[in-house]
Length: 508
Picture (cartoon, rainbow, N blue to C red):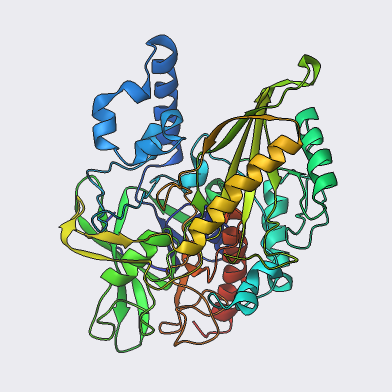
């Protein structure tokens, strides 16, 4: 490593879904890029994965029974994917965070090339947002509109979708825009039965096939250009800012294993470390010019944290004849139907329902939108630091009465749809999980049209620092009810096109 005098065209922080796309787009446009990843590389992960599988197969090892591992990963072990890929997740002892007493938040983190999308057992459901989502604030007054439209984002959605080879069906739903699909997904007999009966009873509800693809790990494509330098085990500490020029010059980082400190320099910095981690880095990058955190003249860095409402769901037997049952797991989706064509009494926004079927079993899992609220926020702990001496994130996030009423409605609606389909409801999990459990957190550095009420402009560029970009879920002004990753990636592609134009024009 070392403090090289090299000045890259771009320094990218994080190699997950967004950081990976930034590396791919920028290097393919001819830029020299350095990406800093706090975790391990793909080869190291593959070796650990093989060892994990061998232990499971030959030694009958069960991750859930590994007391020492669970002690080190008390929070990470609560997610469904942890037993399948435990080494992908962070060590909670080395990477602490704090919450107010009696107000928990479950922060699930994967530190490795590819981020959370490279975790085996990741859900890999990819849905577009629509103008229905982008203009939600205009309808109900609960937060701002996005500073862009579906037309602005559609070409970049298409770039991501074509590269990933997303599979799904053309459904023609205005509030769930169709992607560019590589191939269709046939519905199973169980899903067809559910679709026929639900849509017959409620014409405003639809049952569609999932939209899915393999993990979007773009780093190999970026490395093939020969213009990417990848440094793993690089824990970024601060973003470096030059008060004289008003621009960032790079970042300082620590080697995760030795603890040694280094600097990396670039013409632009792209922050894609994740919604909470990016806010933490901005807040920690204080200076005389930005005493409350870098790019934080609005005071909104860290505020408006959102995560989908989530509960373990409603389980049922489908009462299918044996010839219609399928051993393999299948997924379907019921897009938002509340507050779409009519206005509900008691809550704004809505929820989508993920439908899982196998054998004669059915599981409905509703994900609901959390409205943005300034008091849901990330700050820095004044006392707790991580293994490398960096102040830990302090996360304050709780559900409002709006989310509680929405979840109550979703539990009732899921049961009525199951019963209409002839299913027998066997278990109702109606307790809302703590915020964070949906693992869809967004919103801590939102984009907008006014520097006083947003952190970024419509191209993910800091209003305060023109060569600083934040392209992960931090930029979301509102959440929508769909899984957010496809939109994060498309936004990153759009932002990178803007960066390349601005660099070539000499404005960055």
